[in-house]
Image (cartoon, rainbow, N blue to C red; front, top):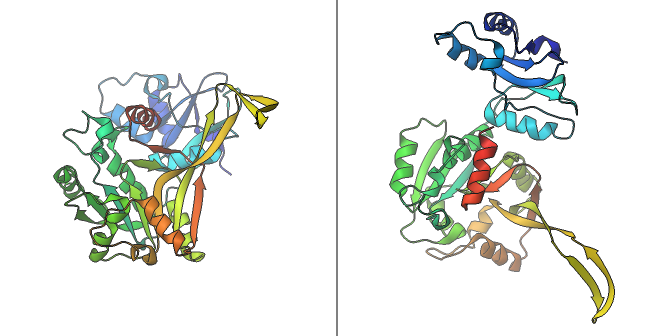
Length: 343
């Protein structure tokens, strides 16, 4: 168990003294607190390196810390650790309900072993709901928290061991090609271009000619999700599913009282009930048999492919995630994602 007190530094501590403390620690992060042990923020070794090359060497820790740091409480430890992993943070504070630091949580940052399964990113949409933003750049290249959506997707795939990636291109394909070719991603990335839009599933018949290792993962190019994609793919393989569709639970509160009646005879009323639905999360795990259902040059969306498979009694599954998920298809969701990934 990590002694969290080693990582605690008062916000009024001189930075030189803080640097000496950090030098003795395994995790290169300091947790900044006030005199009452309340969490104020964190300072990373990167923050200190940037301070070293600055002119002012008389600052206190309070001036250098990140007050919007990631921290965990008893009800959200797993969620916050997953967020820390994505951001490359190895240690986060654990606070009680009074916001006092009572411990630390260690995040595992090691990548999983490489897997041969192909991952396909559908990046050919026009993103019309985000015009005029998407007039000159494709939707996957829109920045969220300072990084293009596409980079966030690719980084997550690589961290989960997916090193064989196909990007299906359409609208403004040259922008994505140039970006990928100018960045040294640790993966084998190839492109597939659509001359005409064929839908999420329709383009897979052409992509299959490039050679794919099944089962494959298919994700829309505007989806950011923090669930463990590799584990779901393993489930599809282990339990011999022909396909699995990822779902996300969405809840809606009816702002009115809902009447219960039987042939218009009043039975009761439920005030402002909440309804829960499992919505399509835009990420799929497909066997080779699913791809064989797709005809060349046939327009086919993914839900229609699942309907085809159902008619043939294929084994189809649903996996629901409780982790962070967002479809960046509207300005409201883009703003929400920017807030989440800017913390």
